[in-house]
Figure 1 (cartoon, rainbow, N blue to C red):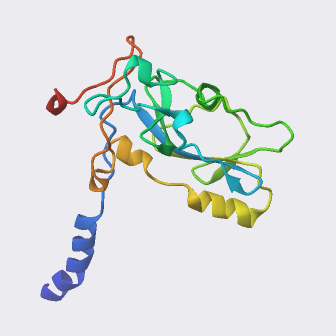
Figure 2 (figure 1 turned 120 degrees about the vertical axis):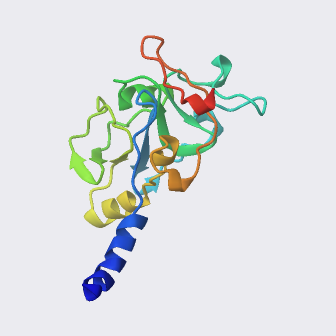
Length: 186
């Protein structure tokens, strides 16, 4: 019996230390990691022209005059985490809000959570998706691009608490589908 406990102890300890993802406390405020690569070069979306939520004071975010799109946007010079505050919105709506178009002279490919799927800007991302849109044809280059995707969306969705709290955001949502504000934030 004692030997069994000694053998099981490390397994139980590792299981106890395993990080568990939590449920997003606000299913109407979701996030996805994303990247766009054209001819082997990553498109940089951290430029100020793509940002919303740039605070003109230190106390607020996402006021009416501070965002490009009310429901789909980027924040705080983080150009790789897409924020959505209303269910059902597409990647196309997001890129339209940034005034970014996908040049038709390229053959585009799309990977969601490392799986290739048909290139479809009508795709409605799920919370914590990792989306790669690329013109790359070679498998080595695509693998490199997939490996460059971040996993920061979980932090913004508050589903990986061990990563720390996300930067402050105001809750902007469709009045018909309001954000859920945790009681501790009131």
